[in-house]
Length: 260
Image (cartoon, rainbow, N blue to C red; front, side, top):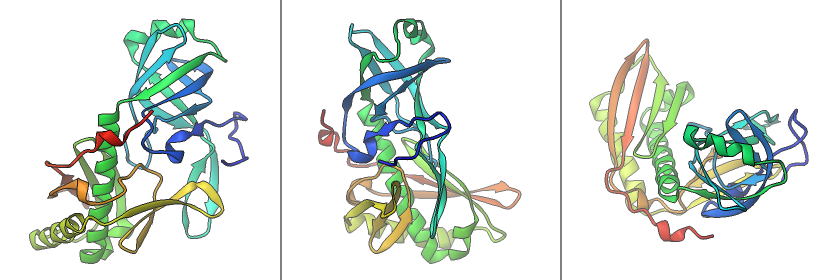
Protein backbone atom coordinates (compact mmCIF):
# COMPACT_ATOMS: atom_id res chain seq x y z
CA UNK A 1 0.00 0.00 0.00
CA UNK A 2 1.01 3.60 -0.48
CA UNK A 3 3.07 5.21 2.28
CA UNK A 4 1.60 8.68 1.69
CA UNK A 5 -1.35 9.82 3.75
CA UNK A 6 -4.18 12.27 3.18
CA UNK A 7 -4.61 15.56 5.09
CA UNK A 8 -6.07 13.60 8.04
CA UNK A 9 -2.76 11.82 8.43
CA UNK A 10 -4.25 8.37 7.86
CA UNK A 11 -5.82 6.21 5.18
CA UNK A 12 -8.22 3.26 4.98
CA UNK A 13 -6.74 -0.05 3.87
CA UNK A 14 -8.69 -1.15 0.81
CA UNK A 15 -9.11 -4.90 1.09
CA UNK A 16 -11.37 -4.90 -1.97
CA UNK A 17 -8.28 -4.23 -4.11
CA UNK A 18 -6.55 -7.20 -2.53
CA UNK A 19 -9.50 -9.55 -3.12
CA UNK A 20 -12.76 -8.57 -4.88
CA UNK A 21 -14.53 -11.65 -3.61
CA UNK A 22 -14.35 -11.16 0.16
CA UNK A 23 -17.77 -11.32 1.79
CA UNK A 24 -16.77 -10.32 5.32
CA UNK A 25 -13.66 -9.10 7.09
CA UNK A 26 -12.58 -8.01 10.55
CA UNK A 27 -11.80 -4.33 11.10
CA UNK A 28 -11.24 -1.76 13.83
CA UNK A 29 -13.18 1.46 14.35
CA UNK A 30 -11.07 4.57 13.76
CA UNK A 31 -13.75 7.25 14.06
CA UNK A 32 -17.51 7.70 14.39
CA UNK A 33 -18.63 10.90 12.72
CA UNK A 34 -21.99 12.37 11.66
CA UNK A 35 -23.81 9.12 11.05
CA UNK A 36 -20.81 7.37 9.52
CA UNK A 37 -18.09 4.98 10.65
CA UNK A 38 -14.47 5.07 9.54
CA UNK A 39 -12.53 1.81 9.85
CA UNK A 40 -8.85 0.97 9.57
CA UNK A 41 -9.69 -1.24 6.58
CA UNK A 42 -12.74 -2.30 4.59
CA UNK A 43 -13.98 -4.67 1.91
CA UNK A 44 -16.83 -2.27 1.04
CA UNK A 45 -16.15 -0.52 -2.27
CA UNK A 46 -16.92 3.22 -2.02
CA UNK A 47 -18.78 5.18 -4.66
CA UNK A 48 -16.33 6.23 -7.36
CA UNK A 49 -15.65 6.20 -11.07
CA UNK A 50 -19.39 6.07 -11.70
CA UNK A 51 -19.87 2.86 -9.70
CA UNK A 52 -22.30 3.06 -6.79
CA UNK A 53 -20.97 2.21 -3.34
CA UNK A 54 -21.48 -1.07 -1.51
CA UNK A 55 -24.03 -1.60 1.24
CA UNK A 56 -23.87 -4.07 4.10
CA UNK A 57 -23.48 -4.40 7.86
CA UNK A 58 -21.06 -3.74 10.68
CA UNK A 59 -21.36 -6.24 13.55
CA UNK A 60 -19.90 -5.29 16.91
CA UNK A 61 -18.21 -7.58 19.41
CA UNK A 62 -21.45 -7.51 21.46
CA UNK A 63 -23.49 -8.68 18.47
CA UNK A 64 -25.13 -5.36 17.57
CA UNK A 65 -25.68 -5.01 13.82
CA UNK A 66 -25.46 -1.62 12.12
CA UNK A 67 -26.60 -1.48 8.50
CA UNK A 68 -24.75 0.88 6.18
CA UNK A 69 -26.65 2.23 3.17
CA UNK A 70 -23.69 3.60 1.23
CA UNK A 71 -19.91 3.77 1.23
CA UNK A 72 -18.04 6.93 0.25
CA UNK A 73 -14.42 8.02 0.12
CA UNK A 74 -13.11 11.42 1.19
CA UNK A 75 -9.89 13.40 1.43
CA UNK A 76 -6.96 11.66 -0.22
CA UNK A 77 -3.81 12.75 -2.02
CA UNK A 78 -3.89 13.74 -5.73
CA UNK A 79 -1.70 11.41 -7.77
CA UNK A 80 -0.14 12.53 -11.04
CA UNK A 81 1.31 9.84 -13.28
CA UNK A 82 2.24 10.06 -16.94
CA UNK A 83 -0.36 8.50 -19.26
CA UNK A 84 -2.77 7.98 -16.37
CA UNK A 85 -5.72 10.17 -15.30
CA UNK A 86 -5.32 12.15 -12.09
CA UNK A 87 -6.82 10.26 -9.15
CA UNK A 88 -6.93 10.57 -5.37
CA UNK A 89 -5.13 7.87 -3.42
CA UNK A 90 -4.83 7.19 0.31
CA UNK A 91 -8.47 8.12 0.76
CA UNK A 92 -10.51 7.57 3.91
CA UNK A 93 -13.62 5.41 3.46
CA UNK A 94 -16.80 6.15 5.41
CA UNK A 95 -19.65 3.67 5.94
CA UNK A 96 -22.91 5.66 6.06
CA UNK A 97 -25.20 4.11 8.67
CA UNK A 98 -28.94 3.71 8.07
CA UNK A 99 -30.91 6.34 9.95
CA UNK A 100 -32.73 3.69 12.00
CA UNK A 101 -29.44 2.23 13.25
CA UNK A 102 -27.70 5.52 14.02
CA UNK A 103 -28.63 5.40 17.75
CA UNK A 104 -26.32 2.37 17.96
CA UNK A 105 -23.37 4.57 17.02
CA UNK A 106 -23.25 5.83 20.60
CA UNK A 107 -21.96 2.41 21.65
CA UNK A 108 -19.02 2.50 19.19
CA UNK A 109 -15.63 3.98 20.04
CA UNK A 110 -12.23 4.13 18.35
CA UNK A 111 -10.41 0.84 18.80
CA UNK A 112 -13.58 -1.28 18.87
CA UNK A 113 -13.47 -4.42 16.71
CA UNK A 114 -16.23 -4.96 14.14
CA UNK A 115 -16.92 -7.33 11.28
CA UNK A 116 -17.75 -5.76 7.91
CA UNK A 117 -20.06 -7.76 5.64
CA UNK A 118 -21.22 -6.62 2.22
CA UNK A 119 -24.38 -7.39 0.26
CA UNK A 120 -22.74 -9.82 -2.16
CA UNK A 121 -25.65 -9.87 -4.62
CA UNK A 122 -25.44 -6.10 -5.03
CA UNK A 123 -21.63 -6.22 -5.34
CA UNK A 124 -21.84 -8.97 -7.97
CA UNK A 125 -24.39 -7.02 -10.00
CA UNK A 126 -22.35 -3.81 -9.77
CA UNK A 127 -19.24 -5.74 -10.77
CA UNK A 128 -21.05 -7.22 -13.74
CA UNK A 129 -22.53 -3.84 -14.69
CA UNK A 130 -19.13 -2.17 -14.62
CA UNK A 131 -17.68 -4.90 -16.81
CA UNK A 132 -20.56 -4.53 -19.28
CA UNK A 133 -19.93 -0.79 -19.50
CA UNK A 134 -16.30 -1.40 -20.45
CA UNK A 135 -17.29 -3.77 -23.25
CA UNK A 136 -19.68 -1.16 -24.65
CA UNK A 137 -16.95 1.48 -24.28
CA UNK A 138 -14.64 -0.73 -26.38
CA UNK A 139 -17.34 -1.03 -29.05
CA UNK A 140 -18.07 2.73 -29.07
CA UNK A 141 -14.35 3.39 -29.53
CA UNK A 142 -14.49 1.35 -32.76
CA UNK A 143 -17.75 2.81 -34.15
CA UNK A 144 -17.67 6.40 -32.81
CA UNK A 145 -14.08 7.17 -31.75
CA UNK A 146 -14.94 10.88 -31.70
CA UNK A 147 -17.23 10.29 -28.71
CA UNK A 148 -14.60 8.78 -26.41
CA UNK A 149 -12.71 12.02 -25.59
CA UNK A 150 -16.07 13.68 -24.95
CA UNK A 151 -17.43 11.49 -22.15
CA UNK A 152 -19.32 13.73 -19.74
CA UNK A 153 -20.15 11.10 -17.14
CA UNK A 154 -21.12 7.53 -16.42
CA UNK A 155 -23.26 5.74 -13.85
CA UNK A 156 -22.84 2.09 -12.86
CA UNK A 157 -25.96 0.69 -11.16
CA UNK A 158 -27.05 -2.83 -10.24
CA UNK A 159 -29.38 -3.34 -13.18
CA UNK A 160 -27.97 -0.97 -15.80
CA UNK A 161 -25.20 1.40 -16.75
CA UNK A 162 -24.98 4.54 -18.86
CA UNK A 163 -22.54 6.87 -20.58
CA UNK A 164 -23.15 10.53 -21.39
CA UNK A 165 -21.27 12.02 -24.35
CA UNK A 166 -20.96 15.64 -25.36
CA UNK A 167 -21.08 15.22 -29.14
CA UNK A 168 -22.48 17.36 -31.94
CA UNK A 169 -23.50 14.37 -34.06
CA UNK A 170 -26.11 12.08 -32.56
CA UNK A 171 -25.64 8.33 -32.42
CA UNK A 172 -27.56 6.91 -35.36
CA UNK A 173 -29.66 3.73 -35.14
CA UNK A 174 -27.24 1.80 -37.35
CA UNK A 175 -24.30 2.93 -35.20
CA UNK A 176 -26.02 1.74 -32.05
CA UNK A 177 -26.70 -1.59 -33.75
CA UNK A 178 -23.02 -1.92 -34.67
CA UNK A 179 -21.94 -1.04 -31.11
CA UNK A 180 -24.30 -3.64 -29.68
CA UNK A 181 -23.08 -6.31 -32.10
CA UNK A 182 -19.40 -5.70 -31.28
CA UNK A 183 -20.03 -5.69 -27.51
CA UNK A 184 -22.14 -8.85 -27.78
CA UNK A 185 -19.34 -10.66 -29.59
CA UNK A 186 -16.96 -9.74 -26.77
CA UNK A 187 -19.42 -11.33 -24.34
CA UNK A 188 -19.92 -14.44 -26.46
CA UNK A 189 -16.17 -15.03 -26.71
CA UNK A 190 -15.97 -15.24 -22.89
CA UNK A 191 -12.69 -13.37 -22.92
CA UNK A 192 -10.41 -13.21 -19.86
CA UNK A 193 -10.18 -9.91 -18.00
CA UNK A 194 -7.17 -8.74 -16.03
CA UNK A 195 -6.95 -5.96 -13.45
CA UNK A 196 -3.49 -4.93 -12.32
CA UNK A 197 -1.77 -1.94 -10.69
CA UNK A 198 0.43 0.72 -12.22
CA UNK A 199 4.09 -0.17 -11.51
CA UNK A 200 4.52 3.05 -9.52
CA UNK A 201 1.26 3.03 -7.54
CA UNK A 202 -0.83 0.11 -6.21
CA UNK A 203 -4.03 2.19 -6.08
CA UNK A 204 -3.75 3.19 -9.77
CA UNK A 205 -5.31 0.23 -11.58
CA UNK A 206 -5.64 -0.88 -15.17
CA UNK A 207 -8.40 -3.02 -16.72
CA UNK A 208 -7.39 -5.13 -19.72
CA UNK A 209 -9.44 -7.25 -22.12
CA UNK A 210 -8.75 -8.39 -25.68
CA UNK A 211 -5.66 -6.18 -25.87
CA UNK A 212 -7.50 -3.02 -24.77
CA UNK A 213 -6.19 -1.35 -21.60
CA UNK A 214 -8.27 1.18 -19.66
CA UNK A 215 -7.34 2.94 -16.39
CA UNK A 216 -10.06 1.94 -13.91
CA UNK A 217 -10.31 1.32 -10.17
CA UNK A 218 -13.77 -0.29 -10.14
CA UNK A 219 -14.65 -3.91 -9.45
CA UNK A 220 -14.78 -6.28 -12.41
CA UNK A 221 -15.47 -9.83 -13.51
CA UNK A 222 -12.59 -12.11 -14.52
CA UNK A 223 -14.22 -13.03 -17.84
CA UNK A 224 -16.81 -11.48 -20.16
CA UNK A 225 -19.26 -14.34 -20.65
CA UNK A 226 -21.20 -13.83 -17.42
CA UNK A 227 -22.56 -10.49 -18.67
CA UNK A 228 -25.01 -12.25 -20.97
CA UNK A 229 -27.01 -10.59 -23.76
CA UNK A 230 -26.71 -6.81 -23.93
CA UNK A 231 -29.44 -4.30 -24.74
CA UNK A 232 -28.55 -0.75 -25.78
CA UNK A 233 -30.67 2.37 -26.11
CA UNK A 234 -29.82 5.99 -26.84
CA UNK A 235 -31.44 9.11 -25.46
CA UNK A 236 -30.92 12.73 -26.43
CA UNK A 237 -30.52 14.66 -23.18
CA UNK A 238 -30.43 18.08 -24.87
CA UNK A 239 -27.59 20.62 -24.94
CA UNK A 240 -25.49 18.31 -27.10
CA UNK A 241 -25.55 15.40 -24.64
CA UNK A 242 -26.16 11.90 -25.97
CA UNK A 243 -26.85 9.13 -23.44
CA UNK A 244 -26.16 5.45 -24.15
CA UNK A 245 -28.05 3.14 -21.78
CA UNK A 246 -26.84 -0.42 -21.21
CA UNK A 247 -28.95 -3.27 -19.85
CA UNK A 248 -28.10 -6.94 -19.33
CA UNK A 249 -31.37 -8.75 -18.59
CA UNK A 250 -30.00 -12.30 -18.30
CA UNK A 251 -26.58 -12.26 -16.61
CA UNK A 252 -24.93 -15.25 -14.99
CA UNK A 253 -24.07 -14.25 -11.41
CA UNK A 254 -21.67 -16.56 -9.60
CA UNK A 255 -22.26 -15.76 -5.94
CA UNK A 256 -20.45 -18.95 -4.93
CA UNK A 257 -17.17 -17.16 -5.62
CA UNK A 258 -17.55 -15.03 -2.50
CA UNK A 259 -15.79 -16.34 0.58
CA UNK A 260 -15.15 -15.25 4.11
